[in-house]
Structure formats: C-alpha cells, structure tokens
Image (tube, rainbow, N blue to C red; front, side):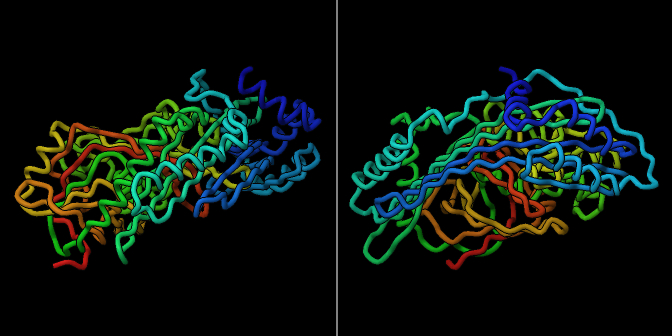
Amino acid sequence: MSSLSLTDDLFFTQTGMNRASVERTVDDALRGAEDGELFLEYRQSESFSWDDGKLKSASFDTTQGFGLRAVSGETTGYAHAVEMTEKAIRRAGETVRAVQQGQGGVMNEPPIGTNRHLYQDTNPLLGKSFEDKIQLLQQIDSYIRARDPRVHQVSVSLGANWQAVQIMRAGGWRTADIRPLVRLNISVVARDGDRMEAGSVGAGGRVDYARWFEPAEWKTLSDEALRKAFVNLEAIEAPAGEMTVVVGAGWPAVLLHEAIGHGLEGDFNRKKTSVFSALMGQPIAAKGVTIVDDGTLDQRRGSLSIDDEGTPSQCTTLIEDGRLVGYMHDRLNARLMGTQPTGNGRRESFACQPYPRMTNTIMRPGSHTKDEIIASVKKGIYAPDFGGGQVDIVSGKFVFSASEAYEIENGKLGRPIKGASLVGSGADALQRISMIGNDMALDGGVGTCGKNGQSVPCGVGQPTMRLDKMTVGGRGG
C-alpha cells in the first residue's frame, strides 16, 4: 500500500471526512496567500524505562490532529486542532485567512515530488510483544551486572514511534510519508570504593526493533557502556588552558551541529542574527573543511523522504573546502531570500509551524588516519565522546563537556581525564581545524535537536579532527 493510500485510510476513511470537501476547504483558506498547507498527522508512540533492576515506567500513546497554515509575505496564520473533522478544518481556514487581507499574493509552486523512500512503512510498535520488550530490558540488565562486581546501577530505555503524515496544498496537490523511529539507550554506573562514574551509549534509526533484539547487537552496546564507565573510574581531573584538541569521529559532531549548524539555518541568516550572516561565498573555515546537511541517508534518524512541507530532502553543501556555499531552507525563508527550499522545513508535530532545521549534519573525511593525527600532537587531549553543551546562536560561542577524554603526551594517548570542557566559538573553531581524518563515522542514532520550543530527531557525523589552540576548561594542573 502506498503512503498516500495508507494515510487516506487514516485521515479520511477512519475519520469519516470527505477528501474532496477538505480539498475545497484548503483551496478557500489559501486563496490569496503566497504559501501554505494542511498538515495531517497520526502518531503512535511507546517508551519503556528499566532502572534499579525493575521496570520503572511503560507508556503508550496515540495522537492525531491537523495544522493549517497560510503565509503572506513574512506573516503566517496558523491554526491546529486534535479534532479531525471537516468542521474543525473549516474553522481553522477562517482563522488563517486573516493574514491575506489586503495582500493579494500569488501562490508559490508546490514541491516537485519523487518516488524515493528512505525507510519502510513498518510500524515498529507491532513487531514485538510487550513481554518481549520487557524481557530485552531485563536481559541487558542481567548481562551487564554479571560482567563485573563494580556495576552499581543499570538503566535501560527503549522507545519507538510511528508517524503518518499527509500534506495537502491548494489545487489538490498531496503527498504523504510514513516514518518509523526506534531508540535504545543504556547507562551504567560503576563503583570502586567511594567513587562512582557513569558510561552510556545509545542507538536507533528509522527501522523496526528487530536489529536491537539480536544478542550480538545489544551485548555490543552494553559492553561499550560498561567500558566507558570503567574508563571514567580511572580518570584524573582534566587540565585547563589553551591546547590542541583531537575530537573523535561520529557523535562528537554534535559540536558542529550546535556551534555551526544552527548558524547556517536560513531564518537566522535572513534575519541577520547569525554570526555567519552576509558571509556567503567567503572562507569561514580552514581549507579542506566540507560540511553538508544530508537528509537522504537510508534509515538514519535524521533522514526524511519528504520534509514537513512536502519538499523532498536533499544533500545540501553548507561549507565547501572552507568556503560558505549554502544555507538550509524551508519554503518561507527560501522565498524571502530568493532561493530554493532544501527540504529542511521541519516541525515537531501538527501543533507546530515548520522552521529550517537540520537533518543529518556531516563533515566530509580528509586524508589522515586517526593515529597520524594523535601522533602529531605534542601535548593536548583526545575527546572521542561528548555530553551536553550550550551555544549562543548570535555569537556562535559554545561550551561542550567531554564524557570521555584522554591526555595526549608526545603523540601518544595517556591517562583518561574527566571534567574536560571545550570552550570557543563556532566561527573560530572552524578556522582552527588543522587535520581531518579519513575515518568519517555517523552517530549511533540518538540525536534530538531543539529550536523554538520544538524537538525533532537528527543525526551527526564526522571524522577524527585536530583543532589547534582551543580553550579547555578543567580542574587539573
């Protein structure tokens, strides 16, 4: 069954709404507007949390609703409701028409569709029984506790959602998407005397649960969480000061996502509130640095067959060989900036308006091996994993904490360190990249991006890279 047929069943057959009548309502609501759409959504979600050797919580939720938007100039009218009836959509149409008064705009052309599907329609919630899911959490807990007597606490969470969307525009234009998403997180606290340290790992993507129920998969993840906890048990306090930092491949690209990626979203640049505003075509990074936002990767957490405006996702080059060459756009900002949308119009749910948002933000690989990069450092730190951080979009300044890090002395890895934080600005950090590895890796599938009060799934990736003269915060000597 096609995505349109499946969503027709959800939104029209099961609700009793007449599709032709809804299409006429959309036409009326958007008459005189420059853009807009009816966004229909149905979502099932579940989550399980295991802690202290027992099931801590389990939840299941079903939501549905619509959002109707009309855009004239920079002004947006938006109305949404959980009531899936023709009457509710007509009321919403009366509300959004207010933005068109006296405007008399011409409707933009709809997106050009494709037949590309980056993930299956499979509902991951239906693939395994409730008992199977609880048993998986219990097996992971038992496996980790049996590995070492220093294990003090094990926390495991499992979650999935299945989202069906249909987007309708004036003139009968329609498109649809079915989006599965799963995630498994494991956290371990190890204890040695009075000292306790944690290690965690996560994985997931736009797939069903099957892969993560394979013992080889969940045991590999469990071993990694355990390894990180034991590394941190041996860690000394991180040094502070200006030094060379080698950042690991994969998830550490969250630093690029936060410190650089948000600043390359179209709305911040149209409003000139980004540190990168008015720098198009100029060198903003070291030679060799190429960064893309790629929403077309199969089954990745941040990928989308179409964005939440119906535009097919694409691979957008943002920085090429150090030069700023592109921004990420939704339809509104692309129109106002005189360019084309890039498939980055995203929203958390039907209750939210779309904004330019990242999908999978990736630095392309270079030519050096990880060992070569580490060997080039006389004194510094190596950070293969990052935790949380804070970023100011306007200035680009950031603070990120390393959840796993090591000393580098005379080109060799030394003792593990804890409490290391990386301080700087995105624009400055781009210029300090002096070596790029050939080991580009994507994160495990756990990223979530926040903007304007909305959260959406995302992905990151990068190779190992060397940053010179970065400020490191720590308490060691």
